[in-house]
Image (cartoon, rainbow, N blue to C red; front, side, top):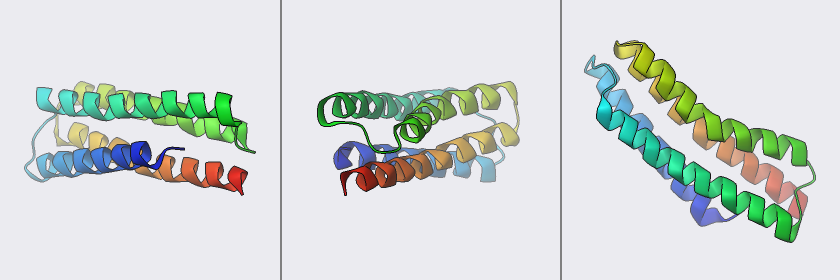
Length: 121
């Protein structure tokens, strides 16, 4: 995996989670800027997916390919699902869902790095 892309996804999702957490503390419902922020995080995740697929085709897949692809797909859908849920719930709890979804992303990325690195060893 490409560390620069992974770190960009991690930093962006943590920044997004912090931003949404401020809104939770202020008792704010999710608004349009949070949709844009989720879009930025999702674009970085899409870039990560493309890079991972290209690397799997070119350099070979990790030993636990099915698990890696599962994490990759979960990473791809967690932010849109969280955003959909947050927009359906028009309270601070909707914004809380954004925080949780954004915090899941770095965990998935780190786990994918571990799987990838285990296959390279």
